Length: 531
Image (cartoon, rainbow, N blue to C red; front, side, top):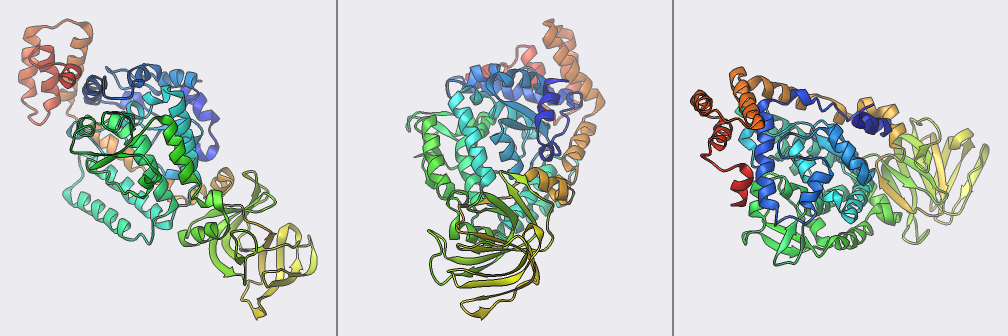
């Protein structure tokens, strides 16, 4: 097995469905030139502007300046740092990205930006994911932060609108990188994203977590507020952003938890950036942010967060059981049932899955679930009457596995409209309410095929169309220029012929720049950036 195949084999099955082959041979000669141009400029410019680990980090993670990195080579190097990487198809769901990162796996978009978007692209590509995220992992403490912030993002509760925005962003990025896309297609994709953004009812935990990630791992600065260094992947992978971010045009603010309340626009240069004192400072801010989440607080805060999200999440009960489902109704108690909990009962919409320690205990239950809060016990089977201090009274016939039939109940003496059959759980406390299903693997086995995030091959189609858009004779010229550079033989007459031939492709400035460099008429990208 190759290093990458070994990495994939170690992944849980529900994450493997998002992994694709890098297909190194599919990179065009122009793709390779794009990589070389960007990395040459970045290395030259960032030499004294990035965190000191940057240059050694490129070497330590298998990223060279002359060719697009092979994920096999990267995995060989990353394994020594306790990390690995896999190729994915462009934008993947935030929960998948963060779960991979919490496991120490970099999700690397296999595609590369076009030469028209060489300065910056909002779409994930191999420049951003490898040359941006990987180098600073060579710093052990920062690598630990990436895993920790990944776990927080994974546990945060996302709203149904977050899912719509993700799909719209993914669609727009695919369309913009497709050279055959029409203006009408681009306009429609942009309008779709605007509509999705306008649909937001509130700012979810997941959105706040993504902002924290953005202002640190993506666009973070570190060090002295007046003379900071770059460590964020978005800055390390965009020469335009890397040059702009340290100018006086960008406001530098001390990093604090308020960055999670600061929105960002992925299509524009950032007007302000946050500066961490050092990488320990990242953990201080993350800890403060984490303490606000339903995952850590549970109780009424967690229940209300899950209710307004309208998505599948899971409740962690006092005995350690986890109940996965969609919270659709909360019934208030007359007073406090437990510290931070004044809810008598929560109703969850199915499918319902019971688990412990992230492992499903049985198959999904397709009915509703009722979680009653208070000090009481449900019998394993037979008739029962359960009366709790909250004023909730439930009666019915218990069947194996917590299922109850002939269910009825009252709250403060008033009859409740309850399903005649449901799963019923009783717990004294609610320590945690966290995002997504408790057993993501089991949930994926049962419902993964219904997940729209895994459907569609827009990225692959766009990549194929991009390759077809490269004229064969132009591709041959790029290949020849690369061969001339690698052999070190610079035939002046042939370079002149290639320069003349490039005039047949007036929009392809990159080939002319490559030829000019070989002829000594222009500095290399690295020297040009450093000048």
